[in-house]
Amino acid sequence: MSDALRQADSVIGGIPCDGRATVVRWNPSTGEPFVSIGQATEADVARAVAAARDAAPLMGELSPAHRATSLARAADTLSTHVDEWAMDMAEEMGKPISEALVECRRAVDVLRYHSQQVTAPLGEQFAAAATGSPIYTLRQPLGAVGLIAPWNFPAALPAWKLAPALAAGNSTVLKLSSAGALTGLRLVSALLDTDLPVGAVNVLLGDDPNIGRGLVSHPDIDAVSFTGSVRVGREVIGVASARGARVQAEMGGHAPLVVMADAELSDAVEAAATGAFASAGQKCTSTRRAYVASSRYEEFLDGLVARVSDMSTGPARDPATQLGPLVDAGARDRVLGAVREAASQGRLRFGGDVPSTPETAGGAYLTPAIVTDLPAEAPLATREVFGPALAVWPFDDEEDPVMLANRTEYGLAAAIFTNDLSVAERFVRRVDAGLVHVNSQTAGADVHVPFGGHSGSGFGTREQGREAYAFFTEDRTVYVDPAR
Image (cartoon, rainbow, N blue to C red; front, top):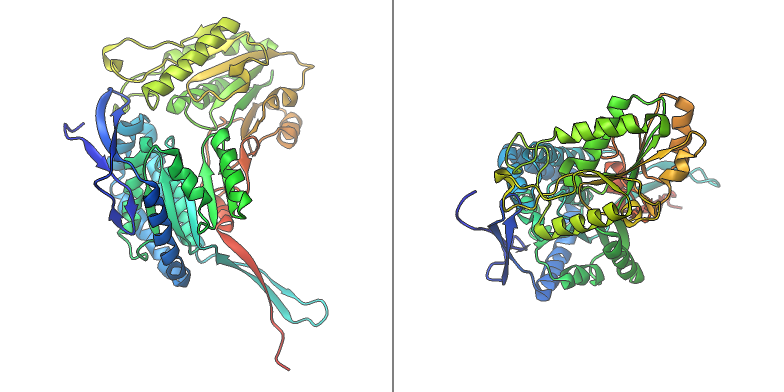
């Protein structure tokens, strides 16, 4: 890390907003000051929305080729700087560099995908029932849209929102988390270097909740796409919906993994370890619960403990690191408290403490926790704890794995390991999850398919794929009758 403190500022109408009050964030791997974040004001929210509103008609008038070229050009720029981009991510929010590289490349893929979707079919044609005259549908941009992205995927999630919004012809105001500001700003910078209209992409930084509230409640914001906690997501849904704005919200998760007696156990162990502990468990699709057939339970636990014991913990920038720090010390302490509470209610089989090695000194590290013998209603079993903690239970053959998986209010991701196709099909159809995996881990998302959940996990149209483009457009049905 450079001795110089990095600087991150909001960008409105293409101009950085320097001179604002700042908050310093620390590198979670080392505990050293890393970046100074300029704090946006409520006046900045109004200015950003005004800039987006002015740019909205200009975006709507751009040709599809123009929009496609701009997204592709930004993808080209980012692809040549993936290593630096990933290092920003590793140092500001603690994602291991091996994972950060994958995420940055995925964000480039998202831009390329939506650059190609610009020229995909936009509607359908029908015939009027009475006359046979043509009727067709088309999709129009919404106007100015608000985007709120979290810190845990600071390259991919802003790309998920910006790329389809811009491809559809909207202007944008993006609220970035301070913990992912540098990573998100590199994406924005690549877009600003294209020939999109001034004001098409605006960015707000800062920790004041009034920034997000001001964006969501602003009457000139036509739609809001939010990713974050259930509590904040429900507030966003309520405020935006009350004024008639379109809302898309991706919220929390508590993904179950079911291991049937006939499962390939080594595959299930690997999926549980990676699904629960990659990115220090800081994914909404992370595996939080595992239910294992009683006949394989102890074998599964032994294999899981052995696999997790082999994971290397260390600074995020080290290519050998598999388990990096949590995003900050506060997050680490919250998860540590939840694990200690769970250990008092059940049995701590592995980890759940702060490592004391020279490599982890000063950082926000926590060893992966594996907890068993928990009551079904325990907080760790029902509430999203955003960190490296996994609860495991045995179940008898006569128990319904779908019932076990559906124990929480969440409905984002779930997985089952089995070689029985009928069991897998029943699980796929009945489990309460928007993303279902058969013989693979709960985390993961392809750019060309819908991503999202329901129940306590999601609201509105899905992200990614063609559905992402659909959210940022409105249908128009056109009747064409010959002149008389």
